[in-house]
Length: 176
Image (cartoon, rainbow, N blue to C red; front, side, top):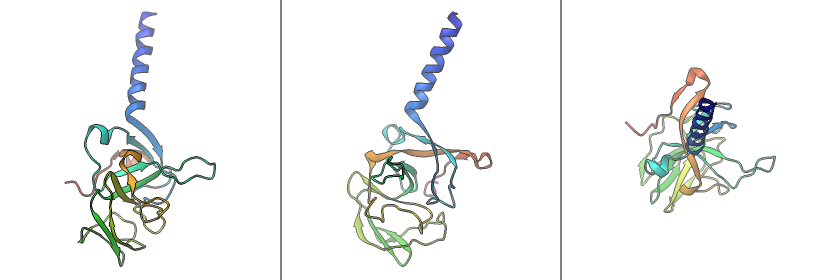
């Protein structure tokens, strides 16, 4: 009986740690193709920015939004951080510029960005995020989303679990 209690307590402690640090997430949209597809199963680190530093350009994050799903629930978004606080974003002729420097984005679906943004300065405590499939992504370019408050970031996507053939850590294209 004593062994069972130890096993149960151990399982509860492990479950609490997992709940505190990891959020399993299933992709339900096509805005991050070609890097993430619908029904990809991901692990999101909920403590990444509380314990391990600030958001970085290229991080893939899950965020709260003011958008509402058909069932009335809040729509969470998966996006890539493009602009950091204080940076100036321009989107001109399908190209993204950060502080007047062209941003190399070989991870996007079609190699160009739709829409235009003129001299948007990312406010303190916020980030500018976009999906990798720019034609269909509702993201910081859209007034309904805008820049994302860092406090509204649920966490950083760190691991793809499914499909099993794609299992692995999620790399940031701007980190070496």
